[in-house]
Amino acid sequence: MTSSKALTRTYFIFCRAFLLLTAALPGTLCAQGSDEVRSVQNIFAPVGPPAEILKQTAVLVLLICLGIFVVVGGFLFYAVVRYRRRSTDDDTTEPPQVYGSTAIELAWTVPPILIVVVLALVTARTIGEIQHPKFAGDPLELRIVGHRFWWELQYPKYKIITANEIHVPVSYLSTPRPVEMTLASADVVHGFWVPELNGKEWLVPDRENKWWIQPTALGTYLGNCTVLCGPQHANMLIRVVVESPEDFEKWAARQQQPANSDPKAEEGRKAFGTNSCGSCHTIDGTSFNGIFGPNLTHFMTRRTLGSGVAPNDEANLKSWLRNPQELKPGCEMPDMKLSPTQGDQIMAYLRTLN
Ligand code: CUA
Image (cartoon, rainbow, N blue to C red; front, side, top):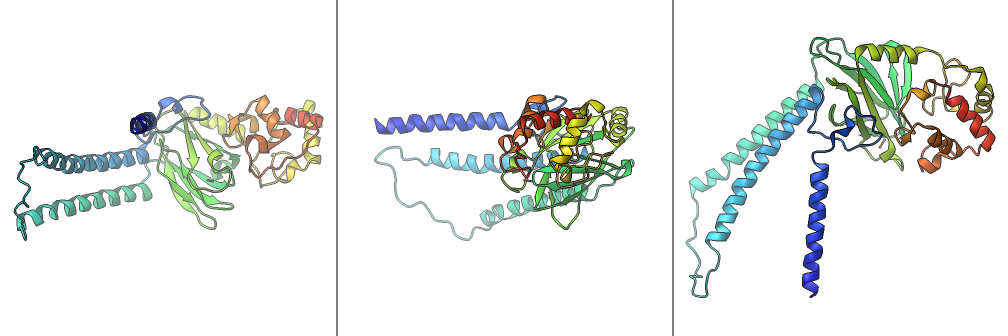
């Protein structure tokens, strides 16, 4: 009875694992071109050259491994079936022992060496192509600074500083627009990964790493921090919005403007100052110039708040201002103990920053 229960349990665990795997492996394609805040990413749906090269290498490695699995598994299966014990009067004496067969020694030495050499060469070529790209076209410069638990984004040529939501123009064959990234960190080690666009790269304090993407299809691509950097590592999400060159220029022109100063939000602006919000956040065109938190100049142009933790809507912003530690426990923004009136005023002000 117990053993049949254990068997049923094992069967259920197996089914669950299988379902999980089949669901996770191909990913869901809904991240592409949609407005999702969270979604499963997919390394087998590359959008642009670096991710495409990585996928080709991954597929080659998987195919070689599949070949090895079939050959080794085939021999094993054959031996198990062919030499199984069939009846009690089977011949159970020791079979002839073979020593020093040159053919067998060569067979299990030479092919594995060749396979390893092929894998090493292909990997070296892939690393070279990813790390020393020859850009077709003038790359867009983007400096990304990892912070616990958000992303600072600087577009030096456009003189834009923003956060968490990367905007880049799409790359067409006729007009390639690679994005050359410089990755740095303000505190601990982080990792940058948008699976559809490229592999992972580190953001290390006191060091700059180069990275690049070249998205060839419109859409929104999501990514994660890949290095455990603290309690909110999992909510250090990246959004890459790939848009037409015209839309990108429009976005950039908007980001270059100083913040709105709507007279109706004047009380909120004052409350923002008296509660020291400005010592951590910058709002261009005001006296608020803190650098510990995300730049809020065009806060309302971003789809999410808290670096992807929730959609940037009224209810979530209200909750965030009441106590950021509820939506994002362990994040660096403390509970400011705002009164409900102050919270509402600051919310009204932030919601004018589009
Ligand atoms: Cu930053 Cu994990």
